[in-house]
Length: 171
Image: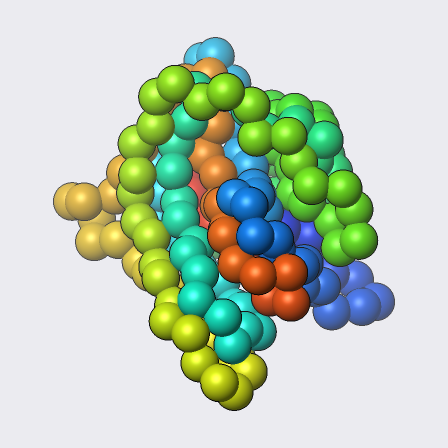
């Protein structure tokens, strides 16, 4: 199993949360190569918000671009430290994440999606921290097809901060 966050792997500093926006934004994107699928095991996020909004996990046929490219060490080996490196396709239009203070990614013209999960919050007068975690049962784990993009997308007000992650197996 592998796990990837919407930030570089934490070393001397904690993972950072990233500001969302009022338009839909891809916070984290995983790109499967042309000869491999991934099976989702779990995903989640933490948010700081007092605003209504949505976080969704979708497979798309088109990449979001202008992301910060992940590097191989950012795709963590979780269950077996001796496993081979993850084979996800790396790059700014492939497997990457939005950085704090960076420009919003270009979402692209998506023509086909599969929705795996979503979470909506209601408006609240007081800011709060929320943690959402979902783990699929083995018989219901979604599979992301070859040459597709798995995205964690968020739509909130500009004062909302998010940290998100996805756990997956290579097939």
